[in-house]
Amino acid sequence: MTPPHTFSHLMTSAASLSELDARARDIFRQVVETYLETGEPVGSRTVSKTGIHLSPASIRNTMQDLSALGLLSAPHTSSGRMPTHQGLRLFVDGLLEVGDVAEDAKREIEARLTGHGQSFDAALREASTLLSGLAGGAGLVMTPSFEAGVKHVEFVHLATDQALAVIVYDDGRVENRVMPLTPGMTPAVLHQASNYLNAHLRGRTLSEARRELKSELDLERQKLDEAATQLIEAGLAAWSGGDMDKRALIVRGQANLLEASALDDLERVRALFEDLEQKEELIDLLGDVAEAQGIRIFIGAESKLFSLSGSAVIAAPYMVGGKGSARVVGAIGVIGPARLNYARIIPLVDYTAKILGRLLD
Image (cartoon, rainbow, N blue to C red):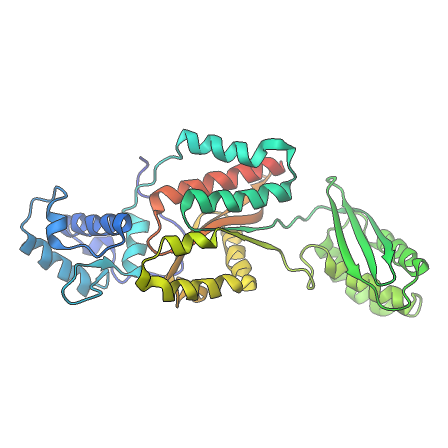
């Protein structure tokens, strides 16, 4: 087992470990670990059977103190205690012991992501499905964003109302987008727009080109056919990172969330399903993970997206390049109830992210 890890987060707990003496830390750890295993509030008698040599009364008094600090709560007056979201954060940051990924899980991850010569897009979908199965939650993958220079651009006429926008990057990747055409858009207009973009894009990244071409197009409108100008603007937006085509989010395994929940949690699951429909917000959340360049854990209200459902997200970025030149291009994670198996899921997400990065190199 590795020592406790400190993970990036957004909220400070109601109490810190320095406020807890050894007895309180041991009891707090036992309550949280038992709750994460069973999903049920934990009573003092249960804690007394875990190797803590104190009477149930002494344990109960300490649990009351932990509740006063905002770390535990009692869902019913006669029940035991369960960790609050602040308590889970304190546990994850200071007491959680994260193990290594089991060898059989490593083999399964590598085989399913690298097998059958599948495309990287297929590997991303498989990664989302894989994590949902291994972690028992819903798997999330944000598709990559690349900043390679552009080598070639072409619009190919498909039908009276459709064209295929093709972009080839310096690193050999090819992106295709089917895009709508306005009435009267002729093959000659497509050719004119292709020539213009090839002259102005080559060697630049899309983000660089988009910034510069926006002002240039205003000056070039008199030289370019109006239809070609509209096509150029639409084509730029259609490629990855553009306004019309937000980075995609792949979600798999929502049914696992139903299976993992008790009947009285179904209202929270319904709220979580509504959260999952807010894909733009989820992409923004995973974008924060990519910027942090490390594992991020969001519990309950630490993300406004999950404040109602009380859910948790464990996510990690995947990168390209070796040491010193590593660059984040996307993110992958698991979403589920706050009672996730953090010790098991954190290394699974991290390892899967590393395999995805290796596939891109």
